[in-house]
Image 1: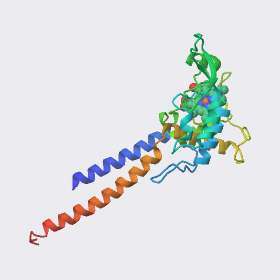
Image 2: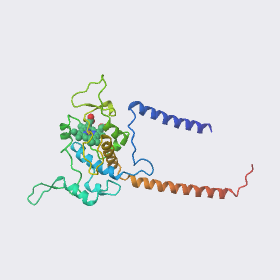
Image 3: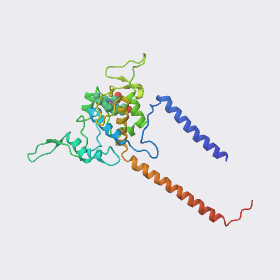
Image 4: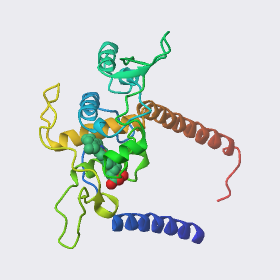
Length: 259
Ligand code: HEC
């Protein structure tokens, strides 16, 4: 019994101290309601489609998403554009193909099977264009950063005037949520920057939420299936526990209790 209490106390203390150490490093993230959190969480389709629009009109100027293909945009569990729409989106980009029968490379409109076009030829070119900083590939960024979606959302809205004691070089900006508070990306969002196709008001917060949802999906495209499986597993375990309990009662009912 003593051992049990000690174990519980130990577990509680690790939980407590872990939270404590996280909150000491970064200010707590901005709160927003994500539809994909929780056991029944699902992505908001309209938000994913708007998020794609923000990516392609704003972030794609600097950030690649090398693991995404245009066909992913039409797959179940994602933004679920129709196949026609996804084809149309793909065709608005040009990719290098070839060689043709003359041995020459040529440009052609992208197809569903093509990967998202990259803003730069290579990492060096992207650094050269961004004052030495590398705009990270965003395919799995939401999973690669501590805090995930909450971190990205907060970072996008976390630009502020620097406190008096912090000096910033040219091309460096103050951000409350960036590690070390200095970031070499100027605030990418401002109210009304995009005009949403579905008429939603494009406030900074709305765009931050939509692009973050989109990045979360690209990092975890199977979240919805995983949640469904998780739910089935729980139901299965509950039924199994009831059966085990009943079996156990039945078996032990043959033994007479002394007390
Ligand atoms: C003009 C180029 C440019 C645009 C446009 C741009 N970024 Fe960036 N971004 C950068 C650069 C450069 C960095 C690296 C900054 C650094 O390491 O200090 C970066 C870093 C980031 C990071 C990573 C921060 C970290 O933890 O390392 C995130 C998240 C991010 N950008 C999101 C976005 C989103 C979302 C958009 C579109 C709404 C966007 N960016 C648009 C250039 C850009």
